[in-house]
Image 1 (cartoon, rainbow, N blue to C red):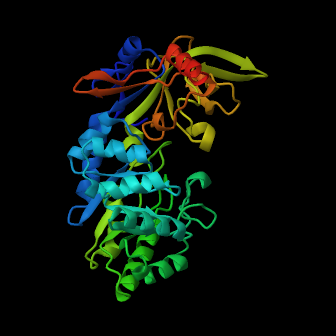
Image 2: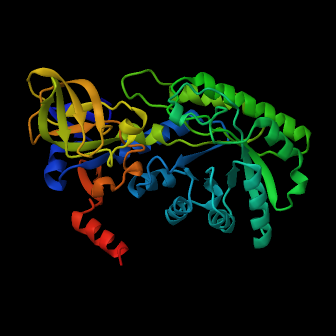
Image 3: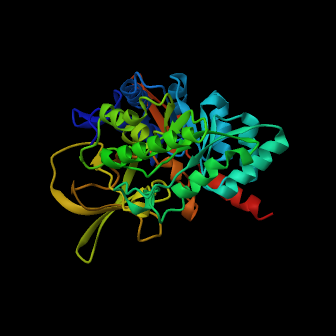
Length: 418
């Protein structure tokens, strides 16, 4: 469990002074709950670690796009990393200046490129020569000049799950460093592009500083080489990916992270950009669900919840580990269970071979560290309503997104059939 966010008092699970059982009684299950103050505290801690470095932390909206969590971060000066036209529109609507927005994504559409050009985002993080040429053409049509950083794929093993390793040779992301260098050398051929930066993002849930520091060193060497070629690099985006402790593993302190990624750039006079997401939101959120049934199949015991992989996809998609704890702690027999969801898929299992106090029908369990890539990846599979989102703050709670209803989903489907 993450004691600073979710903790027991009198054997009841709390967050920010609020018993989660109180929310469950009021809102119903399943629901996501976030401690917005804890997310802000994490952002402030990250910012303090980079003091003395010219930097901008661009929060990754793909990790969590809940405005109630984002607004306090943007008010503190955070930027935004967006990967779609809708994310760009949301960031702008929340008051983020375009000068603090970077537009990522391996498959930006022409419409998205045009929207970023019109907004005059800080930089496009460009993933291919074809995208660069399209951007140059579209910027010319708009009478604008688009700032870019080419995204390098450095073939560095981030030592994370293969599905979230983005800087290896087999990944779809980025540009081969040799090809990127050729494009930078030909910068004068792109009249409507300002080659303002360099970028590399090697993966997510990285818990060792070595790969991140190696990536930073490679980018610093490239900046020096490009400046010798007359390319005026002002920004370096080292990506995100800093991991959190899902099962008690050691993770780098913000200070060590800042030292590792900033050190190679100290004499270069660049603005350093990072893209934090999971590290801000993961530990501050949980998915709360109700026990529907406890059953035995061929000697294996299952706890069936009213949540499913449509609510939290990570365990089914990545085999991700999340701690599962009861909202009410009391003395009872410990047994080994698979904690499973209600969706009609065999992969819909939140936890396997997990020792738990024997649960009872109707009680509530919390799936912890679910604040990043939780609701953001939710769906209506099996025509299941997506859950409510709740924020706890100042000893109280508020629903910041109502749960969808079966009636609204049915009405939507009938509307599609017209």
